[in-house]
Amino acid sequence: MSLTFSCSCGATEWQVAQPETGTHLLCYCADCQTFPRHLGADILTGCGGTELFQVAPSQVTFTRGAENLRLLKLSPKGLSRWYTGCCKTPVANTLASAKLPFVSLMTAPFAGEASALGPVRAHVNTVYAKGPGKPARDSGLRRVLWDFAKRLLGERLSGRWKATPFFAPPDWTPAAEPEILTREERNRARP
Image (tube, rainbow, N blue to C red):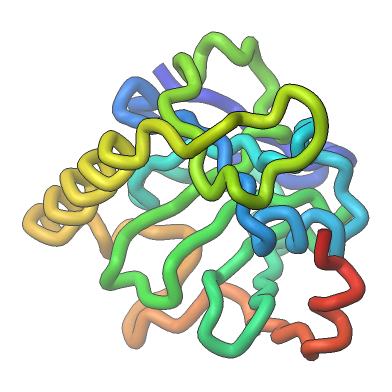
């Protein structure tokens, strides 16, 4: 079974294989709020959370519009934040190196039933949550870290880390030239 995701204009589509191994969570950190705000994408929950689905990069395949993939960094050493150039749909976050195989997909572009992603297993960085109904504290962080460690180790030991749409061999540079926000640009989009 695979899950299909699509950008808002439909020009870019990607699939996730073996979604049952993914971790569904909500992150409320300032950076996860800044990224979609900078793009003008309305994907945040009412409390400022970004709904994410973490899998291994080898599980992600672009089936249409891979050439639309763009890379944004909120700072020179920040996470790699991927979006579509066609309509500025947020796609995913990765670490800066393909050798650390991790992808956290935005769930807003998911084309199916939310239940296919499984229940939300964690609420992290809740200190940045706001408004009524915000979570009182972080929950499920141990689960997220354990799942991350299992995926990373499995991908590295099997060599599957090389099967990533976000980095290109032979030197594993990002699949798109990174755009790095200035401090002023970042601050304008901060919550």
